[in-house]
Image 1 (tube, rainbow, N blue to C red):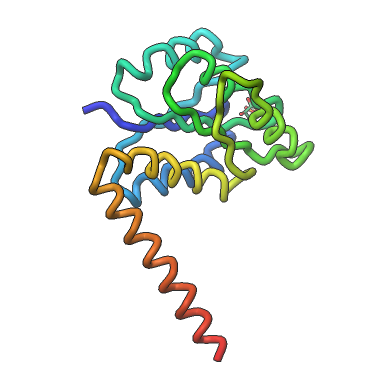
Image 2: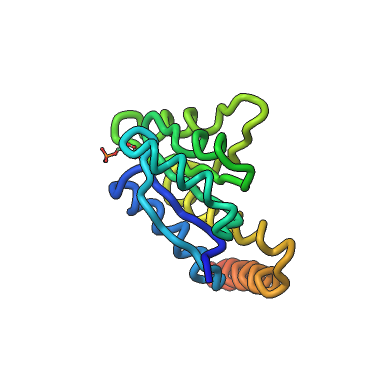
Length: 162
Ligand code: RP5
């Protein structure tokens, strides 16, 4: 069976960040594929990936990139699947460049942009799961359980403060 989510990134150097999106998906039992697809180094591959994603059964695309991070927007331009963009923390400008490149899409081609770095990648996985949970009861139940566990952890850690 084809995976439901595609996690793509502009470079293998993005993996340290993007692995957190994969961890969220794994924790919730969601099938995914992961690939390096670069907007500027492999533009033809990027177009082919985006054009065929829906027919391959992909339901949500998570795209991470750093610097002049045009990958999420370019992929979104070639598919009507939801695209979640993760700004990778760049060395030169700490990811502010990535964030602004991804978030400022002109009206008409949306990219759901997360926070910079690890938190953004984690949330991208969770957001993809929440999208799938609209039609998948099991995923909805797993998400609800995860939220309950999170609440419990905070309550317990607060009690330990005395
Ligand atoms: C972007 O350029 C990638 O998404 C990466 O964040 C950044 C740097 O890539 P490398 O030079 O490390 O391959 O395409």
